[in-house]
Length: 241
Image (cartoon, rainbow, N blue to C red):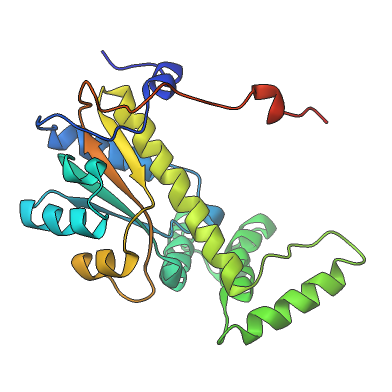
């Protein structure tokens, strides 16, 4: 029986050792689809998910993950990839979706609300994302911070800021996946200890792609969790203002 959300969150642990037990492909695929429903900045969906099942590729990935047990014993791996470099393609996909949703009308027939939505992708997003060797990003950063002296303004406009935005969205999707896996009784382990260049080579990724995390997947072994869960006191991280 599938767990409730609270049950799945409580059940999820970073499992370091998995049993030699097969996962159901359709169930895992459903969890990956749930990952794509995660919140994403400006609906750009700057992510990709590489499900590694091939035994030879798993061996290569284990080496790239520094031989961690969470990779070595995993039944499969899910590599979450941030794709900031695809922003133009994703922008156009949103424009195409909105134009179709609005009935593919003439430009003059759009309502003010519809024009605002379209111009968000036609003008605002390119303003934030376009850059050249970091120079434009720095200029935008300076201009926006001057404007910020007089009124609230969005300030995260540098290339490094956009990378962070893409990785935050990818991480939200990864969390959806791991919670979904926990809900059906499967286990995961998110890993940041890996050689990102080697992982990209193994997956044949372009230079603009960035590895967000590698997730080991399987069914937890009896000794798969290395210790009891520790969290700092809730009062140390929760503030009412």
